[in-house]
Length: 109
Ligand code: FES
Image (cartoon, rainbow, N blue to C red; front, top):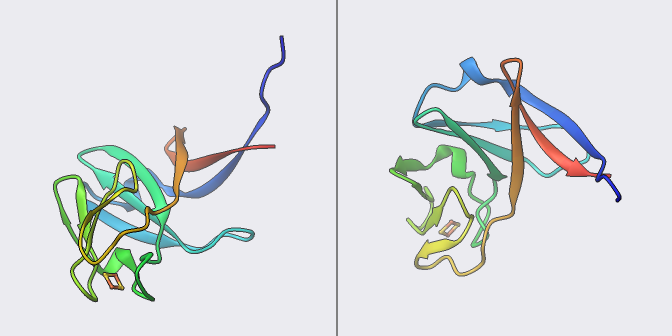
């Protein structure tokens, strides 16, 4: 049986992102990332809206949705799926691991 090997990429400390807020994080080898804290659960997506050049970390969080600050399109933060026009293309999402107080994304090697 093969065991998948994953690399963890540290993004930030969990305590740096209060509940129901987000923060943009830049790390080498990835596009700008948006780290969301939804009531204590962390989710990571690409920060850039798939409809334009907006940073979703500058948008409003409403429940599980984030509203783009440019044209008010919305995405489901948990799945990346577009939920409101004019957004039609899903956001890339990342597998998150919170370990020892740090928020990481997990990437297969
Ligand atoms: S740039 Fe985000 S909805 Fe247009």
